[in-house]
Image (cartoon, rainbow, N blue to C red; front, side):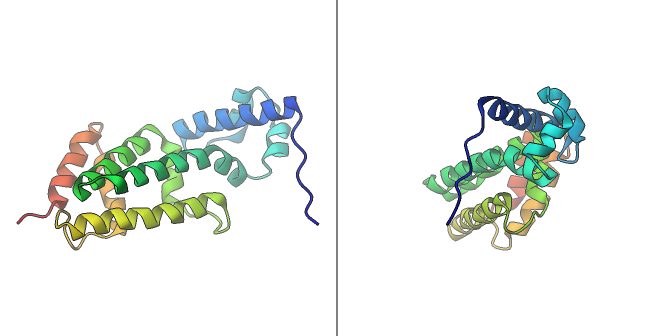
Amino acid sequence: MTVEPRPLRADARRNREALVAAAREVFGAKGIDAPLDEIARRAEVAIGTLYNRFPTRADLVEAAFLPVLEEAEAIAEEALACEDPWDGFVLFLERSVLMQVTDRGFMQVCTRAFDRGSGLEKVKQANASRIARIIARAQDAGALQAGFRGEDLAIVFAAATATPDWRRGLALVLDGLRSRP
């Protein structure tokens, strides 16, 4: 027999929401290794309340970034829906790079491995499958160099985000990735 978790009291629900919002801000600015006491202070709760709601840092990171990974999932789906596969590939990269340059925590969530059973890792794996399809579509259309692989996205993101003018950096990378007749 499975016991359904009881709904949170209104004050506990507000504390949880405040902690998740504070975590998004702090992790976004400082990365997912940012001090948890800063998150508790920003949420205006005691550190014990943070640990009561989120026993581990990984629990808090998951609560803060699952919605963001779902946004990334929507971007990948939009890219797959593009009629022109190259346009879909470009859309995916432009939006993904923008998310990474504006959110340090998101960038770290994308590049780190989490427990395989975690919600974060499951969504990341599902997104990896979508990304592979985006790449394959662009290659099958002859628009993307045949040798490009999903692992090469790390190079694309690093190059595009290495300069404050990430759009220019990405444009240079995309120019190099485009197949030429």
